[in-house]
Length: 301
Image 1 (tube, rainbow, N blue to C red):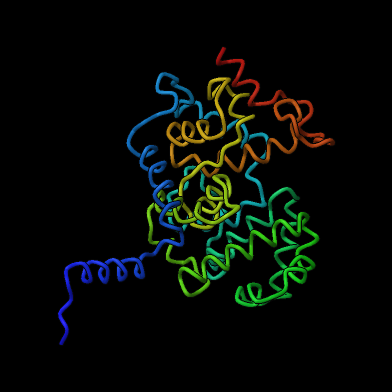
Image 2 (tube, rainbow, N blue to C red):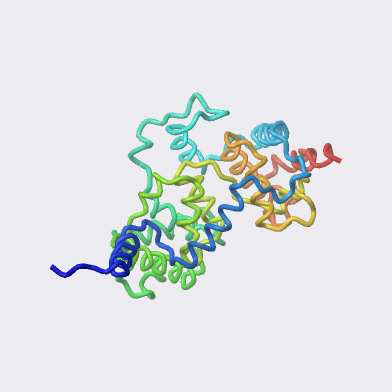
């Protein structure tokens, strides 16, 4: 039997390690992402001398928005799923979690539905996802299909060519690296590991990653809304999106992140006072009330 040299053994061992790697990333991009992740996990803060928001401020805003809007119906299904994994700070005794587990989407379903929700309404994104699943029952069939056919299936959600390119790119990359179209292994990873994995896909930014973490992996994360954060004076005026995200996720208590995000998102759709892109026709029941976010902002001055 031919003996292997030390160099050959080293190459063989490295090849074996590469084949067993769970990451869908290229090594160069993984290294770059890991550096960013490590920096955010080692205790460094973008604004170490900026004490807001405090836990009490976060809880007050959550409670004030809850009093105005109630808990948004569109997010109840996700809240029920989370209740199977977390103790909810404002759990509704009427919430029935029975059957929730059987209705849970796969992680890949969640990622694709999040992509389809970009730059469109909730109703349109739901129609686009339903149309896609009806036209192509499996993700393998989406990967194999002509791009134009996929575009036709999701056209009602807007930006069909862009979203199709992103979806097919993710499926292709995932299949090449894993040999299947499944992201369920993410459920066993830490938050930072999940961020690193998802960020490797072309077209997937921090906000999409945060939404998948929060809605489909039942993790505690806070997708950033820089405009609202500045309205509340929760970050310095010069804060950018990345630093705002890091700061808020360090300052907002984990148990408040989900409800607070859902309520702020809902509030931004109906209140033009605090959101520069609010609805052109805000609901009448909110017009006569002082915006809770502006009230908090004025209290902080």
